[in-house]
Length: 609
Image (tube, rainbow, N blue to C red; front, side):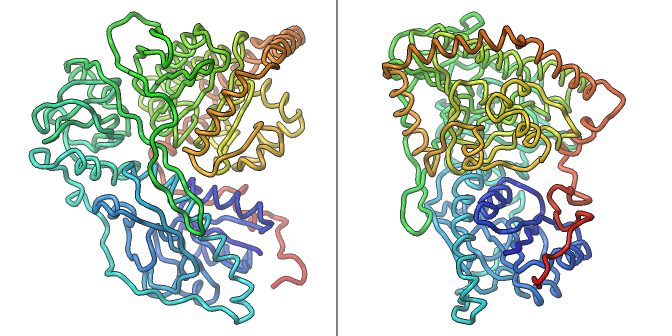
């Protein structure tokens, strides 16, 4: 089929559907929902069999949905209506939620239902639920809806009219307002989780109005609403029955940053607390015809991740499960016999200069452990997305901070490439983009969850050239010709395609927890394999041969020469693109690599109406 994806943005869900539907053989083109005339023009040019709207903020023009079947992906169960569907589900503490694919009609979210899928609602950030449970359910429901197209065309099947729930309104800041004197921890987290990603929860810190993001439960007791201390770059705030950690905030006219980066001196005045963040629990899906997602305990051994005043770099104490002292609470380390697991769950996958330096120190410490395999786990939602563009945008000198950040990323990649005593594995439970995708390739083995989306290119960020040794890592995996294609096409890569092309070595697991469990089993098998020593010797030989042919530092110098032009040269494209990305500037047009129907040579295939 010829499918037009009409969407507000090419977000994670739209990218996943793009990859999944393209794999099924459908011809896809994308149009951003900028205004009605642009939508009408896209429909006239592409002449789609069907229009799919995975992420909209406006109604589709009446003349379009009357003349074409338009399927809306609504992040709520059958009969749910209105905006802020997932926000309300979190605020109300719903036990089960879902996704519905329905046909656009005059009344909002009231059209006939083509398919749906449901899941238990995990206690988590809205952004995490959207990237995991909602996305998996949406893929399932959209595929089911498209399977019904032939019957619909033949007149042997018609979508059913649902029993409609009352229309719920847009969630306001009043609905999310935290009453610190009365709200318990569960309620506070529900309110903060409902606004995570966008728009945040309006509150105040240090006497100044701001929006709060990135909250986790915290094991502490203090006066409700009081700032009890600081951990990492966030703050700990008391509730009526405990405390929460708040990692990010945004002030009026500012951008989203760690609390310590916004409130500097006031934040430093808080006591530094010796405690760890409670890590988010990974979701997982069980079988059946519908998407059933529920919470699971981590498959890894629990580790005391307390921070103390030990000197930098951090070191590991103890034996099994090594107790670590890391300066960044987003970094944790655990051991299972001969395998070490290094997790780095950075907010939105962004790795600023300090995060890279802290992770490098943690990795250097892990290399000194008596392990045979080191697994780089990243986080549940993201493995890594490379440079921290928000921090760069907020810096006194964005070019200088960009330079520091890319060099810190390169140092980390170099350390992984230079590891000779252990086999290294990158295990991607979540998506990866730009430099984060090439950070993964620095390991000897790269495994990914089946639903992971990779964006292994830089050009969408103002024609950024990129570094992280990609010019060495990518061609040695896929060949020079395909490497050039991957870097130039600017499109997402699904795990199945990445495996087929050799970008990764394995794709398994339908959900993060299943993926983590199988990762543990596979890593253990590597560590116990009688071939391990021969693998390490072959690795050392190849590294020596590659170094003799062209030193790693030459690759780095060549890449950084291009990056220097991006950061300091006369062409401001990178700085302009970064600013628009951080400011979330609305799109004024759809990029041509997405809008196939706007190619100069595009014509509807002969014989197709």
